[in-house]
Length: 127
Image (cartoon, rainbow, N blue to C red; front, side, top):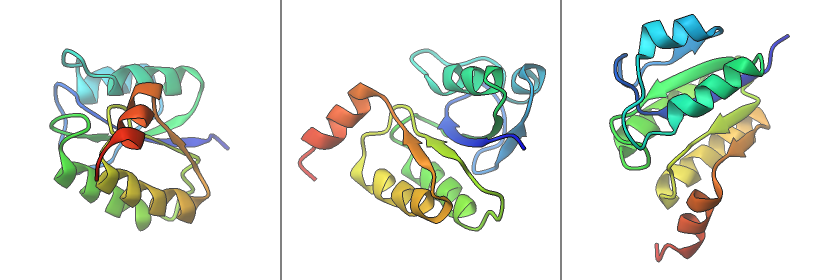
């Protein structure tokens, strides 16, 4: 049974607020296209697929800032019966988004994957 990673990030194409289920690199390119500048989501997506993880990709308008897109995707994951082994939120340092992700991580007993820069942003925010 393959482990499942849920990931939020920008992409050239694909529907917003919709889970894109991906198992191979050709699917990634066909469904989501190329990464926008400064985006990290598709970079992490490629890594997840290369490590033979099933990927649930949620396209967001802007990594770290599109609260509506993040909260809608996290709500979908709360109702997902399939176990999520890890949740990846590159570019997110926003406390509200991270609090909502904590609920999903607790429900699925999953890990939160973030970067050192994003953790620093969260820890030093004044919210």
